Image 1 (cartoon, rainbow, N blue to C red):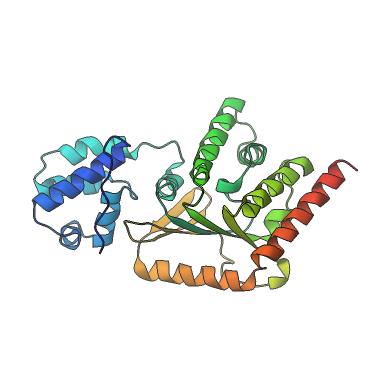
Image 2 (image 1 turned 135 degrees about the vertical axis):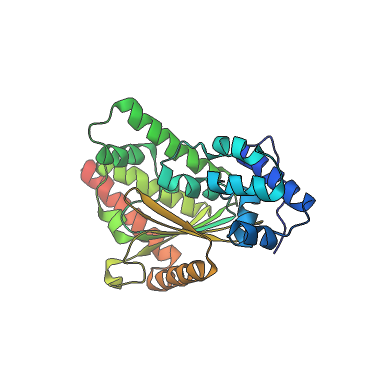
Length: 279
């Protein structure tokens, strides 16, 4: 297993904790696999803690202090690393997403968060929370748009999205909001910043009928998969699970339109929305 890259301890509490964990493990003369055995987790899980792609839970912090003889260092500091502006079920996945070198995602109903416009995101959150005050909705939109900053880098992460045709056809907000959202996504594709393929209705039954799927790869840690349901999310590093989800994504790609044909469809639907809004 490749060792984790050097981390900048000043970048975040999680980076500091990961750097300290690697230092303490190496000082104890333990490999990631050996430490994992004592924590009853995989060596790859330890690697993800060191790389900052997984948050340290209190139960593991306690065990690490016992195994590595670090008194109460990890117990005292794991709380700071666990703080997040994202919902609990999604926080770990969002933070892993920010460190990924490649992201593959299937979105069955909505444009993925990384590709959303402010107006589209606001409409989504308002639908989720129809009676919430405006400042609460504003904070949620700001957190979602903050995630999109990872696309400011011209090449990393590589983002490959399979978007169900339903996400193009369902009105979120208004026709003007939809036209803007689809044009924004098409612009990113035209600039070769993302790859988007549309899974058309005519594809019929497919490999991911159960719901959304996200796969993440890292330069310094094993890959992860993430599946989500209302207020529930599961992030997995289990090799068999990640392999199965990778196979599902490949099957989705095989059933989808090509990137060029998908772009033509996205821009055509955007034009339809704009024409209907301003006849």
